[in-house]
Structures are given as structure tokens and as C-alpha cells.
Length: 185
Image (cartoon, rainbow, N blue to C red; front, side, top):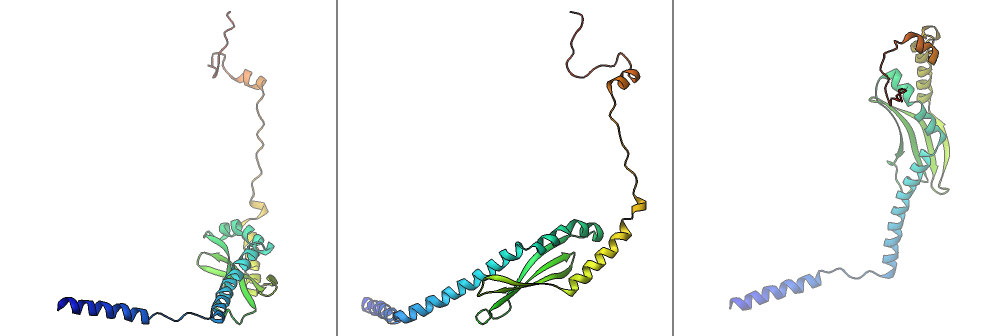
């Protein structure tokens, strides 16, 4: 009796799982699903391409060249990073917006605002922000205060000593480093 109940339960379990399987998709549904997946992949590729183009900009390189100067003046860690704004709705957006940011300690400044056109796959505009212009003016004002031409000390010129000068000042029995050649032979 117990075996019959066990077989009945196993049989019901197997039959219910076969009825719970989803129906096969039609060709149109498969094509629509693939198109959605391809759109997501292309969207991610746009972000990657945009970031590569941001890193290749000459404005990014000029900001990176300012890092040693900013480290000296602020005595804080300084980084220049690129940021792609991904908060907009990807499906409807025809452009992406990115920034070249200068991070000094805890203070982040957007130096440039860049617009990327998704249809052309290129950067359309590069705009210097007002915040960056003000930061550059402050940097220029700070520099003359820290380094003034009057405080520099002149370099000392050290002339190498010639052999004749060394012979007059050295005692004769000073040991010579290196190989010795005996003149007694």
C-alpha cells in the first residue's frame, strides 16, 4: 500500500513539472528578445567608447600635467579622473555627458563638460566650466606667493679637481684604492 502511494506521489510530481514548462517562443519573439539584448550591449559599448575618447583628449592630458604643481601647493593627494554620467534614460538619450574632474583631497572640481553623440560615435563639444576657470585663477594667484624670484639662491658651481691640484694637497704615503702596480720589478 505504501509503495502505491509513493508511486502516485512521484508520478504526480513528474507530471506537474512537465506541465509547468514554458511554451516555446516564436521566431518574432526570439528576434525581439535578441534586439533588446543587442541594444543593451550597444549602450554599454557607447559608454566604453566615450570613456576611451575622453582619456585621449588633450584637455585631459593638460589637467594631468597640473598634478605635481597642485600637490606642491595643496599638500594633498591629487587625481584627475574622467566620469561618464549614466543617470539619464539610455533608450531615449541620443547623447551622453562626461566630465574631466580634478580631485584635490576631498574637493572634486569638474574641469570640462564633454558631450558625446551616440549616432555619430564621436565627441561633439568640449566646454571649459566656470568652476574650472575660477580654480585655474586661484592656482595662478597662489603660485607667485609661494615662489618668488628674489628668494632663490644662486647655484654653486663646483669645478672638478685636476690631477695636478690633487698632487699638491695629498700626502705621499696615502694608500691608493684599486690595483697596485709595483714599480720595483
